[in-house]
Length: 269
Image (cartoon, rainbow, N blue to C red):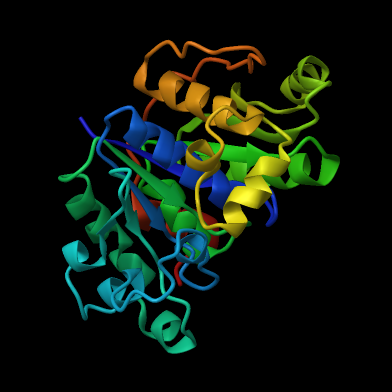
């Protein structure tokens, strides 16, 4: 059965998109049919970091009713499938975010895992991805502003009857992992699912438009993403030195509805 995860954050700059890229790639390397989708139709950058910025058909065209879903799916050599959003203002204006639920109903037929890169923060377009996921994964940095903003997203997930799968703690100082995990656990309701250490290799790999799990497969961040992917599929990740702690997923799963979520958060708009 296909699992749909929305990866969200309360603010920009947390490393959310790179978490989507590397988690999706790690799942594909495990032999899982995986699709990652850029639901940030206003400020899309998933295609940019994957080298797909010049694609003719994107999620914009699909949401505008100008193309079929299958035309916007691009398969990479790793086996990972990507649905980028466009970067043109006109494409953004023509896109209807309410069609995202239909898009997902088509994508789940083709994959074991679908991972949605949600817009940062809380707005109407950003809330819709929270409703169509089986679980929401929050990317949080070990800093107060990131935690406070993530808590707001967590509250919205609860308001719409969604399910918080857990927290991806990103950019953690490598010599303070245990202390950071303990601190975050004491202030956030969601359990910590994965811990990704601060790693300069991520920035270098991004400059080459390559996931860090491909370019630097044994780097600290790569080991963290691989461990996270293994946790999602229920496998044990055999790690070498530099073990990254990973905590279990929250179990509850509930069905979500776009209409209910939009009304509950924004009223009748």
